[in-house]
Image 1 (tube, rainbow, N blue to C red):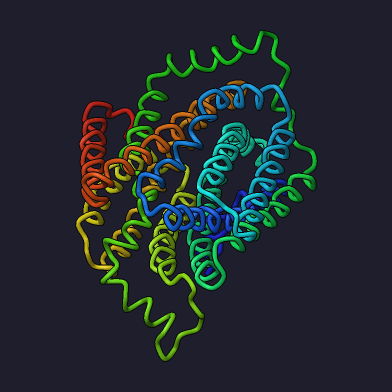
Image 2: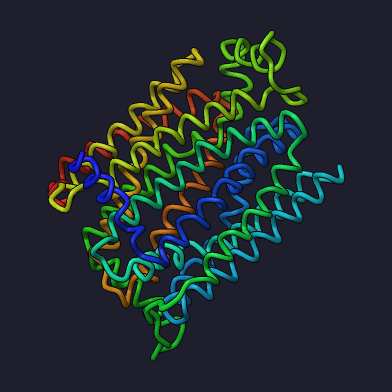
Length: 432
């Protein structure tokens, strides 16, 4: 019993920090709303257009402001209090969600408006992400609990990924997409309140002594000179461009590829003798289950990462995730069974966290405090830009060759690259 209690304290040790504890619960509520909006937005776009390419275009619209703003956002978070930056971006996201909700509930929403609001969200995220990731060190007062805090951040993100789509599936099926957007807007109040209640934050940011362009260039130059950082970011980029787009095409799998196999689920929930919801949009239910299973797998993986002892070889686990993630996607792409697809997506979620969370952790561990905001802005730019471009390319390919082949080909190339890195850069496997 004592050993078990010790393990629990180890898994959640970052929660002993007051500021991080506030963030954990406030951000957790907000992330559930974010995932509700993500799924509802996919359903809305597919309902309005019936096009996989349109789903990819949503990702592309978020990419456009990311390119000019990400490096500036990283420089900003190294020069200004990170809490101030995050308060501004989270308030902007609240307004974006309420605008989307208002247009949808009024019945006047058009696809160009969804694109425009996705552009706005991309601009806010470009500034928010590097500040939010670099802010973790401030909340846990140093690097001692950093790995645990990043693991718990991932667990929180993926718990929301499990709960958000499930709740959104029920809400959208019963009332339509507008209410899901409204709920997301209201959940931002929780994270904004948590930021306002924080106290005694360290002064980790300082006014720059050089111009803005040179300040940003210093961050780029540092990353270019660090071979380990370049390899880690390349793994993230290839995976985001070729493997991650599966999430963009999930409505296609739920509505078309797995439609026949999922009918029994729709009938049981909506029309069977134990039906517990009146379904206006029954196709939302299989999508919610698929996305929820990804979240469950990712949540389990994140808790495993958060529980790793200090002596763990994180590089080996990262390498394993680099290989298992695309391999499980290949199986998913060939599946026509709803139950087998659910099982594959559990492994997808688990292995993705082993890859992404540990890459994030190792990058922050080897980066000095004075550079963290700018390095994390390059990391965010790398991941977000390749993921959004990947969503676009997957959507265009899916319209031509079908969603299963589009995902299968990308995952195969990603698997080959992961194997090459494992063979040619053994120092990655040796990282702790």
